[in-house]
Length: 422
Image (tube, rainbow, N blue to C red; front, side, top):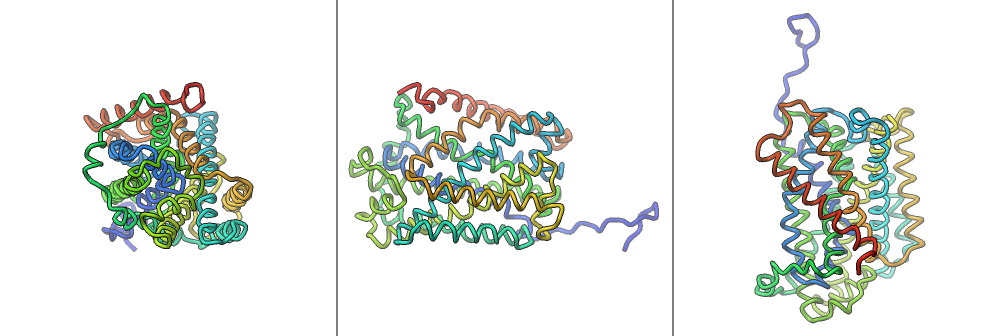
């Protein structure tokens, strides 16, 4: 043990950690970003509007990265969760407002995850009354493993199942000339397209992602020394999640939309998505590929969403909430909230029906919450970070400008989302 010049114990000299020791929070939160609701929203977009949703997905990549990159810096530098920072800098009232947006988006997302899992089970003839309780139990047990890293690895491995959409796209034989011809065709005057576009925006930037990654980098022990590699982790995840969305859109555009059935095909369940693709991919291939992809996205998102919600509530209430070390007296309320979140979500889904409409509505709701979420994030970046760690120059203007555009679009879609404009 080394002593410094004052005679006290000196901290050990930090060593450069391996890539795997740093990467993870950005990748898992991005895999969760492409959850069951997002995949189904992308499928509906491709089926109804073909390739007209590809360009918006590309535009959203830098916005997604910039938002989560701010989140990383806030967590690494302050060592505090998102809710705790809001409470300290803006007071308890705004902390509860922020927690409210988190709970609303997390509950909505969790419903789509369980509905997606139920749909996959029914795709193979297994009742939701069997799949949902089993998955609920598994998700609760995963959080009790006593290690954030263990939970993260499980989430990433399962979440990669959504890459099954890539062979589905290849099997669909998309015509790249169709993509080129319709790439820039954005029918913004059509309210149906505008509603789905709002859903796609809401499917990219969600309140629970911010809460999750900010606490995850703390729980994993990411330091300022690791900041550059954690940014690359987030950048890679941003490209991956948006790439999956584009693949899903192209797959449905190359099949249902190309044959002219997009407007009349009601994708009400996961099974209907697989059935719609069966003539193009084969019945067995369609069921397996769609089932694996939806299950992977839903499972990893269920972990991330419920942890984000529980972490956020714990931040606002001042509870201990680390996954490391298992259940103790101090963090017992956090684990109780985590477990109850899954149980309540499972019960609601067992009594619900239309998965696709539920998924799209949840993503639109996320878009409507963006003004509060992005506004508080930008203000925290300015107040909570020391000057040397804040955004500067053209990067600051770019982030601020893109955030204002997204907020403006969210407000613009409010009348359509509320049914005031048809």
